[in-house]
Length: 300
Image 1 (cartoon, rainbow, N blue to C red):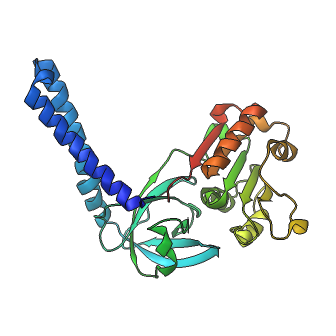
Image 2 (image 1 turned 30 degrees about the vertical axis):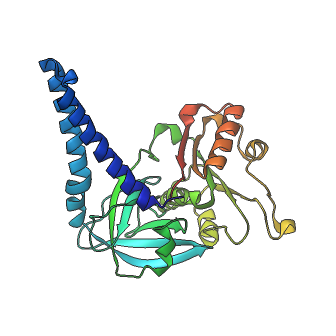
């Protein structure tokens, strides 16, 4: 398995090779330039490709260079998982919406080979932005060594999730697995800070007691939200003390959700096997696809 940075570098190299070979083939063979319309079409495509590459690799980093962040603190949330709090360094923090993502990089310059996507995990109402990150790759493995005051760059927010969406007004069902609970914490904290009393049902699956995240935060949120929390442990260390063991099943969902569950909005985030299972459960329950949004965690 190659690292994310190596994969991205190879991706850029192969893309450049394909573009160069394509141009050589078009102009060398001249088959695709037989008339003015075809020539104009290819020129437009080349300008678009070149413009996108220029924006991603030069213009966007130049914009980010004027808006650096600094690490306020790094907090351990559980086994191999940390939350990093970032403050804007000399500018007003851009607004974001709960459930959105951003690409972040660490260092003195935004001109880097790779940036990594992470979900916001803090409230939209906080001064700092928070990302909760699990050690899982060449970039994330060093997070426990990050220090307050270090410079970071944040490219975002991205994503269309919006708590003001009319489809969500009757309530939400949030399904999280492992570190996939991160965007759900952003949603919950934002709702709590805004005094949002819509019913919200949280189903959170993890491996065992050592890997469960945000326990204290969940306890605090219970008194501030109209929230039903169901935690499921796949392999609990103390099975007798664990109310829900194994996986989030269709039967568990039906047992905990209200009768109007088809009218609620479902947001899920987690590893691919968990996501596939949730989609199958919701389909079997008759939940409309228009009432489901998902965010898959595949490469960290």
